[in-house]
Image 1 (cartoon, rainbow, N blue to C red):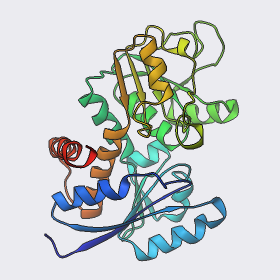
Image 2: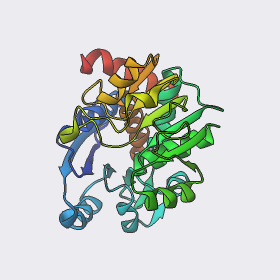
Image 3: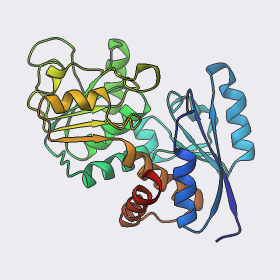
Amino acid sequence: MNEKILRLGLLGKDVSKSPSPAVHTFILKELGYGCEYEKVSVGVDDFDCIVRRFLGDFDGFNITIPYKRDIMEYLDGIEKEAGEIGAVNTVVCATRTGYNTDARGFMQMLTCAGIHVKGKKTLVLGGGGSGRSSAVALKNAGADVYLYQRNQEKLAETAREIAVKTATADESEQGIYGGSFEILINCTGVGMHDKEGQSPVLAEAFKGAEAAVDLIYTPPESEFLRLAKTQGVKKCVNGASMLFYQAYYADCLFLNREPKPQEAERLYEKYENEVML
């Protein structure tokens, strides 16, 4: 075990149920390091104070809903992919540099689930940090990406910034309830916490789809995934493995260590067997 103990943390609006401390502690232990991991649920009014404390006292930290864009103004540098996405989920405090490991973790999750996206008409629900990173990753992998969020003004702005198409919510064949997408991905918070049991789309949206992915992992089967199964969708995946993979890539950044996808998969399999059971 390396003598260095990393001091890390997680900031978000409500991270009370996040398994991030267990995930990062497990990964770093397997890589030979100790870890102290603090998670802080923070409101908008307290965000500035908490961010400054983390930047001054921690080796690094992670950012989740809804602050993946807000954090950027506090940083001295933004890594290229995070800049393209327009969202940061990982901060290395020594250099005050922001990174985005969501996109890489997201694509590894899809690959391991046997979901192939090239040329597939894909709907991404939600234009926040996770939606942006997923949409950009899908676009770069060759998918035909459509983005949807309820605020039409923000939808148009986000789609323009990350260069993807926009979807409509009407009942026509081109709308999100028309069953015209091969892959549907929920990147909203609908389905967890106070919105558990709800879905951002109706069952009709899954007609003819081959895969449904929900970045929510608590509960393990969201209403979004349950509805997908009622429509015969064969591949239904929650975000548990993405959470692990993005954490692995973040920890490699904290350690200034070259990441290895096969190592990430091996560690996740061990985590599933030893911790998640």
